[in-house]
Image 1 (cartoon, rainbow, N blue to C red):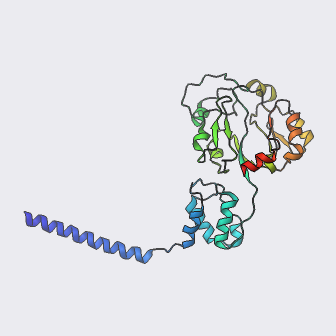
Image 2 (cartoon, rainbow, N blue to C red; image 1 turned 180 degrees about the vertical axis):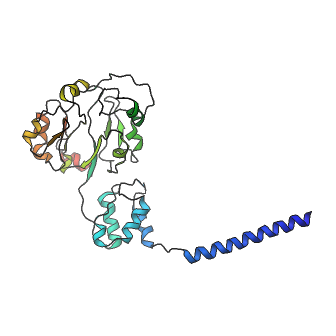
Image 3 (cartoon, rainbow, N blue to C red; image 1 turned 30 degrees about the horizontal axis):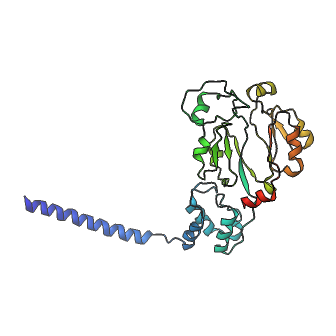
Length: 283
């Protein structure tokens, strides 16, 4: 019996050895030598694999950079790393990185607990995605923030937090990399990536409610009512589906303050020009 066991073990060992040799030969024959630049470029990247660059992850982005021509490279951009990282990657490849304007995520909703108090009792799972499927939302606004913080949990950089007083998310522009995780996560599409603006000056409509004026104001005091006053100040602004939209091309320095002051409901958000000290602290 022992001799039979030993013979079986030897047979299995022989099969395993042959299989190992075959696998080694095959791997050597079909192995692909990876460009060493890929590893070097990947080491320069943030390593968060956020996918904002349009690639599967940082390795895929590094691979695309290593294979690109100087002209193709201009179309590649690591959102999380920003201009500084792209300059380093370009230097490694001997290219010149195209300059891009810094951007930041903005929340197109001002449905705070004060502006849009609870009108509906929600007892389901504390998740925006789940609540959006089964409820209009506590504020009654079918397009407003659901205040459960899915975007907070999705942000890989800790740039979003829920304000305990207002109940809605707040974006820290110093931490935001415009990776787009919040854009992809919010079930109501309330986030938009927009230019930071010169000295942090931005203007945009902080509302996504497409209901008609009276009903929109009933659900939220800060709702856009499509009164068209903003379009009289700046003709670039368009109104569709009872909602105003200020394109990023509109000069916040020229129109921002006037637009914010003219809006009767306060639906237009204007960051205002920052002091030189504030700008210096953010750099």
